[in-house]
Length: 267
Ligand code: IPD
Ligand code: CA
Ligand code: CA
Image (cartoon, rainbow, N blue to C red; front, side, top):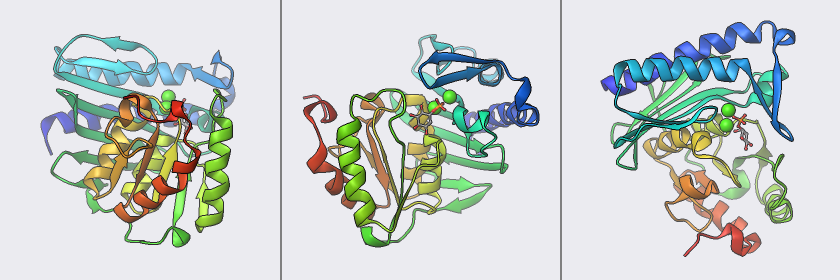
């Protein structure tokens, strides 16, 4: 394993143990509202601090973009961190959440870790070297027909600007697929696409820390990731489609009629 990925794994596991400990006594958590339906707990913050400490201890000159503490430093290496993706699930004891850490080198995703602490499942990828779940190689599913596919998504829940467009996409998707799921952690949804548990995924308006790690997992597992028009800039727009190559194309086709100008790639 590349030393940088190894450091990210160590950081993700440390964050996972903070999360697991706290999950045993959820009543004791102090919850703060960042905005409507947007929660943060001391666990998100403690996990993030632990991750940053481990990364900067190994690579003091690297830059960071972390959900709770924002950007710091300036370097061609930037770590993108979501210390706890799926906070709402975590608060309810619904065991579907993850730690996500990715490294961008000169703007290119190079290493990724998504760690599911409730299952102790570690997903890792390095560009050009494949994707792994607990050291076993993973690949996207082989399903070719949308009607046989299980598709993941995320509902709008804090910003309802695109809710009508989303519901149009959703209405078509539930009729054209074998099922649609909303598990509640975008990082883990993408890891599931990489592992072939979901055949595809789409969501509107995510942040880079939700998707940086998971999208490299999908690509290294043989899948495709793009924005709603099939372009590469999904980290910037946060509008994302992922899937095995066949299902990816059909998800893009299904959402296309519902795209408003704001959901299209800026020229
Ligand atoms: C959220 C999860 C969720 C997605 C939201 C994200 P958070 O992250 O990934 O699945 O639908 O848009 O913000 O806030 O729990 O880290
Ligand atoms: Ca998140
Ligand atoms: Ca988070």
